[in-house]
Image (cartoon, rainbow, N blue to C red):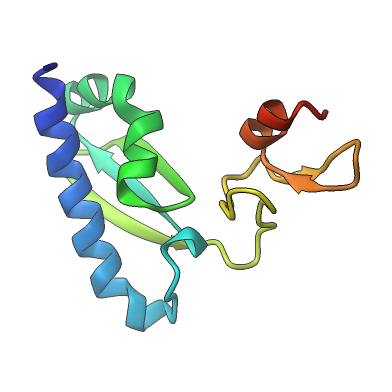
Length: 115
């Protein structure tokens, strides 16, 4: 097991805690309607980079952005105004109408073989 997973799960816990606190304030009930912007120290960011694709799924949100800051902080993003993928329901910033008329993210378009 990669020792970086420990840091990844620590960040996951911080994001989930911040989402629980922000749900009522933002009126978001579905975590796929949210994203998170996380600021961490430079060394931690480097350790988390390999886990980012998995970490997005582990927090159960549509988007997870990792930036550099003086300390760990989490901002929850309201993504309800962004288009939602018809396959995964994620709002990851890549969702658009595809060649077959469906509205899919880049990831899901590649899986089903449309452009």
